[in-house]
Length: 89
Image 1 (cartoon, rainbow, N blue to C red):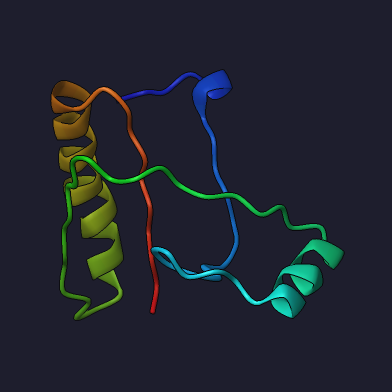
Image 2 (image 1 turned 180 degrees about the vertical axis):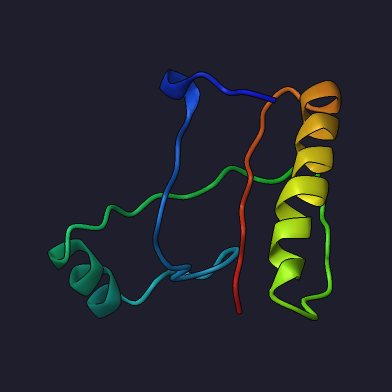
């Protein structure tokens, strides 16, 4: 699955609030002061979620080549709008 460069999008940031919560004003000012922009994701209608055990250094390679590809193919066939969000706790 090759995506044209002009259709690639990405974002780096932090989750400041969830649901109906309002983010702390001081926190928002701090992030904006460092060049970040505040935005919200739309409500989720369909979700595809995976987990994969991280047991060795090879696990990440297996995940990228097998799981990421399979999920990408599934989403491409099943869903019109796509958001890949990787959350790390």
